[in-house]
Length: 114
Image 1 (cartoon, one colour):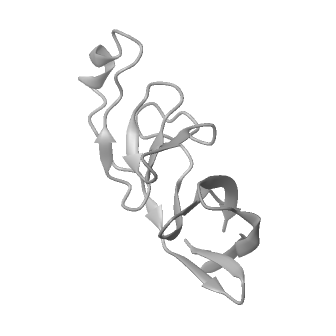
Image 2: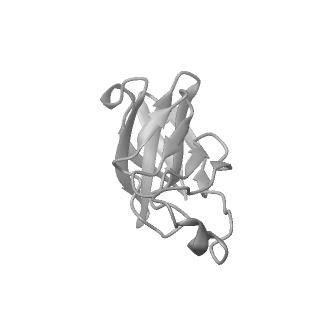
């Protein structure tokens, strides 16, 4: 099902927005190549990504343990490596991609399919 989450004009290129679509908390991103949506929490220790930085124009970096994910595909670009010692947890918390959601624009409205 598609859910309207905002207007296209609400986000500039390089910005992100925490939204909810059909009861699912998401992060909506506007990159150079368009809009993308991912789950709102990191797959490492389920910390919120909403204060994460967009780096290299297409990755979100977790503000807690620095895991990086490709916003377009959800794939892990770099697994958690901060603070020192976090690697011990990584022996149990294996790399896992973010879930992504299809986004479409209709009449200037941003729709996310959940």
